[in-house]
Image (tube, rainbow, N blue to C red; front, side):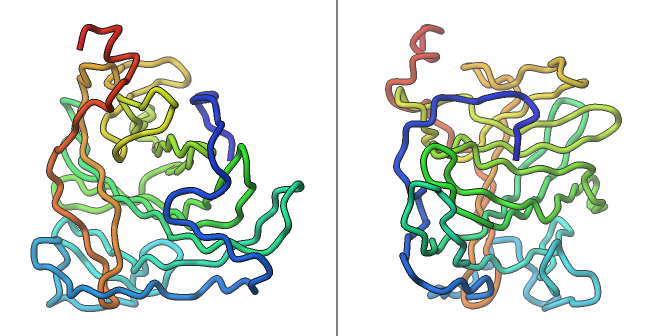
Length: 248
């Protein structure tokens, strides 16, 4: 997948990303469920009383669990995907789905965004893991609609990931306002940028993070999705050169 906004940073990382385990020679099994060990927590926002609703599937998975924002959440899985790096030894890598629930606030819009991304192949260095975007959804005033042109990009081997969608002629892009000096994020996406075409309208990812957001990774717990609380715990990455240049 080619980022719509150009290259993000140098990619000089390790062959496997965090949460992905290489298994040379293993057979591909795209449906292996992730084993959860903890019971669902009532603070996660999952409405356990609603149960599974297979009539309106969320993204690429049949069924889902409706949360307090109205999203139908799938249960993330670990999937064995092929290693396609020409210099590699073949085999497979086991890697998790990456599904996120994020706040959405640009001063005009106030709501939430949910995206599902499924690993499809491991291209090794420097391209890293490739994900297919199953879909994205907006919750505005507790009304859920499909997000137009939702696209998750893992951001190469350094995992400087982004996710974007289009709405009312604008593109909303979740990104990172702070990185380690070696160009890796120290937290999930934490800020929002707004574009019209390729021109930026609101630059919310400066060091002062003028459009802050919270994104959390949906987890699998005892066969159900678990959404951590959407609490802003952002802190500047230690040694971030942009923060130092800004006097922070």
